[in-house]
Each structure stands twice: as C-alpha cells, then as structure tokens.
Length: 166
Image (cartoon, rainbow, N blue to C red):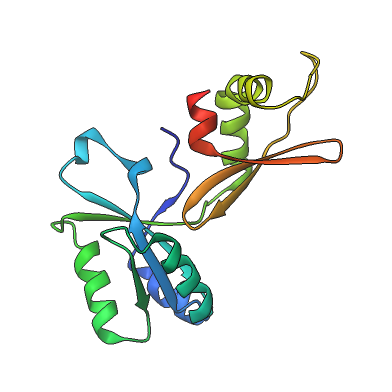
C-alpha cells in the first residue's frame, strides 16, 4: 500500500498555529497499516484555516469512529493531541501533507505506471500508444488520495485505491 503522508510531530502544532491553520479534522487512516505497529490505530489529520472548511470535511467523514474537529486554540484539544503523540499511546498520527511532491510523483511513475495504464485501458475509451507518456497529478480530497489523469481536453479523477487494484 502506498502511504505518502508525514507522521505528525509535536512541533507541527505551533507551526500550524503560526500559519493560522488552527483546525484539524481527524479520521481513520488505513493506508498506513504497519504489521509491526498493528496495535496502534492510525489517524490522519488534515489542516484548515477556516472552521467552515473543516466542518465540510467533517461532514464527509462523520460516520468514521475517529472523525472530529480539533481546534488548536483550545488547550483541551492540544492536550489530547499531545497524549496521542506519546510513544505509549494507542495511536499513530499522520498529517495530510507530503514532504516532497516530486519524490511522491517519482514513486508513482515508477511503481504504478502499469497500474495506471491498465486502469485507463479497462475503464476509459482512451486508446493509448504504448510509447505515450502518462503524467498523473496527485490530489488529496477529505483525506483520500486521488490521481488526476489528463489526455487532450479530457480529465479523469480516480481514487488511488482503484489504481492500486488495477
């Protein structure tokens, strides 16, 4: 499973507050499953500068057992995040950012090029020459990774899970 997101660290809290990204939406994150850390629950945090945007994301994932809106100006919320970051906690927190977009793109191009081509052949009417290059772009929507494929004036947004399965 491809897992592109950063582990969340304590120092990110102050950085987010300084950047005025004071709202986090939490949700279960299954892509980070690690057999060696199987006892921990993986949580993905997505940052927002506006409460309204955080509420929209929360509405999309509210059925998730770990879905919540965290306000980094609330000391109780910060305290809870710090508890979850403790090495002995039952959680592993990830932040919905990638450190290097170029590195992630390179990994996708290398490892998933054939998956993308199979997906296109099976699920679209695009007929591609074997030498035709595919240049996917990444997009994260409500904690879900998508691949954006463009060909001519056509654009296709596909869940990364669907590409992995192809």
